[in-house]
Structure formats: structure tokens, C-alpha cells
Length: 429
Image 1: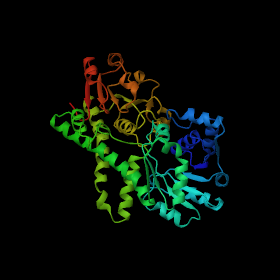
Image 2: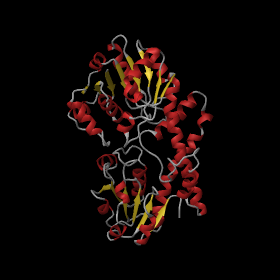
Image 3: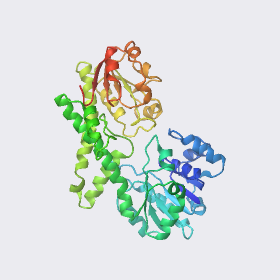
Image 4: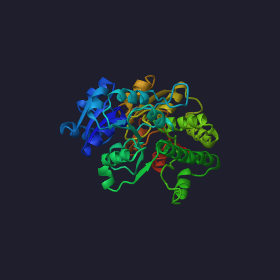
């Protein structure tokens, strides 16, 4: 099929390349000429394992190309995927829908008869119906469920496909788009527009709630001397609960969970249903408290004041295997400590350039060990595999004081203590 993908950020670029990978002819479209030029030359504008290879392969075989013209997109494609961002509106918890509106409005005057527009962006419930009411074309909604670091795998081998449609024809077209995945046994959920919109925000709300639940338990564990990793392991054996997303730490960040739960609360309030999702306010609050707690633990380890101290922060991205620093707990903690008078040096395997652009007042290091030189406390805040492989004895030789805050409960505390370190973690002694 001939597909266009409007918006070539993280979601759109991955979707475009993966749709070409399964055999479609794909045109990626964006207003950002620099981004389009980079993609057309095979240069990935973000770090995502496996994406550069898929991009290069499909540029070379001719199934994938890029443009800045909505008119060209409309003329090219039978199906048009809208993959633009829906950031949080400045000064509000509402989702900013200007890019979604602009994408649809840019396509509308140029569409061929029979065209299908498919939204993939995360939007407040009711958005698709609003867009469809003024559109002389079919519109469907097909939410994405990508995990950064696994986006290529999640696109090519999704755990489910959800489509909101208003006609049998729209569903038939989308079944053809995703025929490769359906042939492999991927579950298919066909529903109405509103339910499809809600699936994404409901899923993210549940995941955020699960993370904040275990972090709330971590607060109780800290006060009572209990151990939150053991608690999480024990309750995770219950199949109704499960182990995933039960690792206590500095909490969630990124470009999805924080802004999506806030936008969901805002939309519920507009619908007069604020009580239904009021709990998400506490989910958000617990998450932010964990960042403050990491700062407090580090402050205790340096004697009650950061003034004049050196602090090493291991991690800048909101999660490993990504260069995404949006709403990163690691950088929030680093900047809060810097504001209290410390000299903060940050290391990250992939996120330093993005972090430096957003937080130029922090110092940055090309290696984890160098970041720790002269530090009075080291904070482990993003769970990169290379940090688990650090030699505690070697790091002890370069720090000013062997004090560690493990904000992800991922390091071998016993090994670090055996090397002479004082170790504190969230939710355990």
C-alpha cells in the first residue's frame, strides 16, 4: 500500500520506517526541513536501538522517502497516519492539539476520494469525533504503545493492535495495512473512536499508578525499616499483580506518562468527571516526591548541606536505551541539587547532548568514572547497563567520599558496601 506518515518525530519516524520494512511504500512528511533532510540521508535524529538499520535499509530499497509537502503527501498516499506530538499546554494540564489540528487541516484540501486518515497521536477523548465532523474523508484512530528502547520491536511485533473506526471499509483498510502483524497472530481490537482514544490514556494511567503504588510502599518501608524490593518480589508472584513496573525508585518521566495522566485529568474535568480520575493527582504527587526524597538522601550523606560539595549524577535520560530527557527524574534531581550550591557533574551514555542543551548550568563528563572524580556523593538515577558493571573499588579511588544513592535499586548494594561505600536507596535501609 501507499502510506504517508505526517510528523517524523520519535513516533512518526519509527512508524514510517517500520511500515516500509513490512513492504509498504511510505512517504514521511514534516514541516522541519532539517529533520527531513537528516532522515532522507539516513541519519537518525534520536537514539533508538535498531532504528538506524531499518531506516537505511528502506531508503536503499526505495520503499521509504521523505518530504515537507502536505500536498505531496495527499497525492501520494491511500492511508495517512497522523503521528505529531501532543505536548502539555504551557500553563495548563491540557494537551496541546495544535499540531494534530494542523496536520489534518493541511491534508484535508488535497485528499483524494477514498482516502483514510488514521490518528496515532495520544489525544483527549472526543478529539477524533471533532476532527471527523469537519472532514470529507474517513477517519480512524489507531493508538501507539511504543516503549522507548524497544520501539522498532513494538511496531513490527506489537502486543496488540487497537483501531477505532466508523465504517467496515476503514477497518478493512487497516487490516490490510497490518496484514503482516495479523498473520503473525497479533491480537486485533476494533472499536469506536472514543474507546480507541481512551485505551492509550487508560493504559498509561494504569502503568503510572502501578509505579507510584510501589513508590508509596517505598515511603512506608523507609519509615518502618522494611525492604521494598523484597516486598515487590513477594506481591509480584501474585499473577493478578505481576512483577513488571514494581521497581521502586525516583519514578517515571519522559514525554508520555506525566503529560498523559495530567491531560487525562484535565479532560475528565471538562466532562464533569474529575472525581473519576482524582487518584491520578496523587499518582503524580507520589512520583514527584520520590525525586525530592533522592535529593534528601544525598543531602544527608554530605552532612546536611550541598554548599561547596561535588556531586556525580549517573544518568540523564528518563530511562535507559534512549536519548530522551523529557521530564527526566535524573535531571530534575541534578538541577535541584545544583540549586542548593553543589557542583554537579552528569554522565549518560546517550543523553549528554540533549541534557547540555536543556541544562547548560550542569557539568557533563564523557565517562562515568570521570564524572565521579572529587564527588562527595554519587547518585545512580538512570538504569543503564554500564552502571551495573562499574567497579565500586575503582570508583572509590577517585571520589572525595564513598557515598552512594541508588535511585533505581539496581546496583549490588552488598558489593558497593564491601568496597567501603555508604549506600542509601529508596525504600530500603
